[in-house]
Image (cartoon, rainbow over all chains, first blue to last red):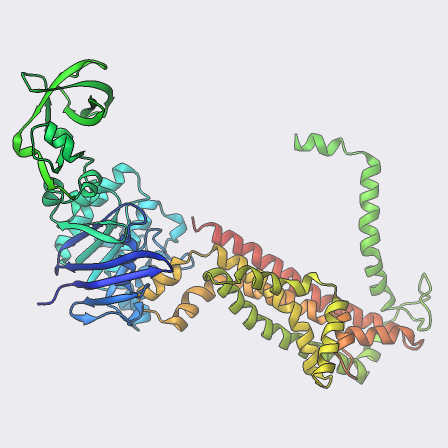
Length: 329
Length: 271
């Protein structure tokens, strides 16, 4: 069985800018795949390469085993949910959702029935006669989702679809998207710069930086065993320890990642540091320690004792929490 | 506060404003009035009598029909040319980035900023150099230079307000280039094109200067009127024709104004 999407040494250069640089990628059929990275890391360009809005400068792309380069967007069995939703302002919601089927020549009654079914799926039944301008951001997002899903794509591409929504709505949509994906069994490829979103929704994550994939793996793997400094820092803001610091803390001379929530304060620990700042986050308190010039962040769950600013504290961690990334990470 | 300011307006200023408006528009009413005068040699005021006979006289003058026909044909074809070229140009300028984009944008707008006499002279000498005989088509070419600008300006403003991802969304949903143009682009820029087209038609219809330089033996309606004013006979015929010209050019401009106004409201709902 072929992969849903395969990239073989795919590059996309814009002049001197290597937006995507020799990327190898395999998306399994039916999985929820997240492309995570800061802005300008090449993740959106990768999505556009799958959609067909960009053509690779070099390399080979396959979608369900079929060569994709040179195939225009309108002949690919993939659909996109755009960041700004891109609903057609001159059409009402039903005609927006039915657009794909209208182009394919499906009879009017049938396509409007399908559109209504799709709107029901995204919990907007009866909204067909409204204009996109009359909807809230969250509702437009759902219409965009329905408009893509009604075409039963093999791969659904989502470009930061939750970026414009407020926190509450975003969390709700995360759950709904995940449930929809499971129910439909369609491969979702999701672009986001929000590591929390990627960790909570995706089956697998590819972390992008400077046009390259730094690491691919399950959320657990990415979080627990980052391969590089960048991944450790970007996903979950880990403490990235230099080889020198790791050695001072009793490990080998290698780059290492130590999660803020894995550090415990107090007790008869060997190491000591000064508290330089405290910030209350609600469910936890973030404590910044100064260890002879090196910064170390500790996350204390609510209910534990918080040291005073400027105090000297002892700290320790479970030996298994120190994740080594090698001397050249 | 608004009404305060209104009540404080000095009477003198009100009168001045009224006189200004009267100065602008009374001559037009005079043109209409003299279309009904019984005196056909000089414009004496008040007219000695009123009659409708000049409408019949005008109707039976073949030279009027010839000039009117030519003007309508020139304006129509110039408008069509402008619609095609102006839309294509607006699409290129607003949807893509390429070397020299700003320059082309400026060069397209230049003909309407240049005095018509410069456009006219330069076209005339260019036609001479290229040994193109003056004809119907040279008039059309001359008019198209400024008609394109009008369409382009309208279309480019609408294109800029249109999200670029709409076109991608349409392609993504299976529509090829023509279908995307038909179902997404045209409905979004349609009123702008209609408004631009009507404005272009009106501009072309009453153009004198460029036409003088690019026409051969033919007379468009404005040129015919100019020639007619010099002759002493049947003067009110010119006034009848002037009335028709006002109607033919004013109505499309009025329609264009209302259409673009509605378009603003529709596109304003997008966000």
